[in-house]
Length: 234
Image (cartoon, rainbow, N blue to C red; front, top):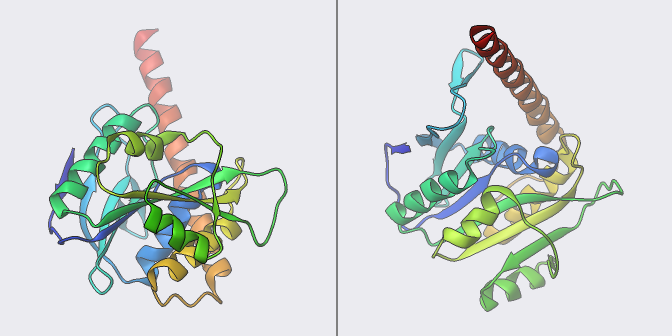
């Protein structure tokens, strides 16, 4: 389910969820802060564990919807992966995109790599020739082969509006701030966001530490809940 306090018209919708290197979540967190967005809604999944985080005395929605009026961009930012509920989450995003009559949706993802790099490659996937030409002109590489998992894969099936995916080489077993910063840099080139790329890495590291803390607390809370349920059963 979702709740919206504002309905922008024909925005670009950017989605970012935990995945390889947590890059989608870190990148969208940076954009939310840098673009001075406002919170305009949230998504929740009835079948998912009921867990929220509090950071600096502020409630952090597991899946928040934010709006940058200057660039007419909506950012859907998740600190919860919606594991097991990807189809339901994708359906809510489709409803939001339809409500906004979104111009397009851009999904941010990581793709696993064995070799670390301070300049990871950016790959793209799109089924629209004009988008492919633009991505190629910016130096992004086409994803010719691969398996896509999670919310992005469900969106590819469900969404009727133009959908593009940007992938960055990243580590699967830890937050990858370098990769997340590269994604933000790619979006900066693509959308002309006016992002100052100099502090990107340091800012991404700050968000990485914040995200790790929130996820660790969420994991502990879930483990405690499961132990409590087992005590009831036992």
